[in-house]
Image (cartoon, rainbow, N blue to C red; front, side, top):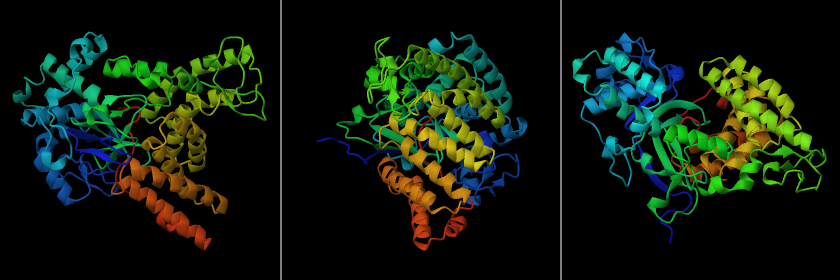
Length: 480
């Protein structure tokens, strides 16, 4: 009998070190990650924010009293990764190299230096070596204490850097948005697969790992480190750069699935099915659904567009990180226009660019456009991920959340949103557990929609969802 069934919790892991994403400061509590735009700033550094005196006292006792001066000296301008590096150095200096058993439910007993290090390989990269050397100088100023000198020596800091780089996760909110970054020792024990049988979600800063399929033994648990809506070539490239291994999992061996992630649209407008031409012999491209021959020139156009899109997507991600959301959508516009009718919605270009545009439009408070692009990406998400993966549930929740905030008095829209919410509740129950914040958020949305539809009064929704609230939850995304 399998050790884990669908919906079984495998572990709850409190991060060894964690930080709030810099752009979220002032919106979330830096200790418990509760959403709170009225969070109070630390009276001394005036940078760290907390939702309550209790959280502030706990943070001060655990680490803030050692970092408060550093935040003040650097004016809170450390990057999220540099701040996580500082937090980790601080924990190690305090002699805390293992997980707190009172805050974790895990079958492992892990210490920081149990994490895999690839420093001997990484330091051969000139860019990485320069970053670590500069980090040593930056953190020496941050701590302003010679007692940290040993940990900040080049190779010592490099070993710490390498372990964080290969094992840190992006902590996701309920709608798949990044709200922080954390280093999880026990979760780092699980190997990667592009066909995962378990998934990570978050309750505040804590990671939850649930089985989304039957798993025979603890050693067989597999999670994904990469975005599964990317084709094999790009997943492997990311995994090699980030984790120093070449993936040969069953997902990477599935050439048909990979071809669908790069598929074109059937040229017969009455059909509209996907043509996975990369899995077909050259010169014999055709739609498996209707049999329509797919022209060689269309294949060439699709290949060329995907090549240009890869460059544009890197630029979009860079501009999004810089908060330049207008440029994000401008970069996507010509490519998505050319993709219309050429690339299928399962194609990674449609899915990835649409998600980036949805996030950008959300940041610019253009909810109708955010909703449209999130819709455009949904087929790609549901194709790429296992049906019970939290990535699917979070995408559905994102659509429902945006749809509710638009406050459009349209019964058919609410009926569609109710169906999405029902699916989200079903997925999050198994992928995050019924006690998680993300499941409770999904259930709350479903109840709001059901009540409004029964009363035929969409205005009821305006009262319940005029603002965002709740803790974190959601899936490991691109920034693992």
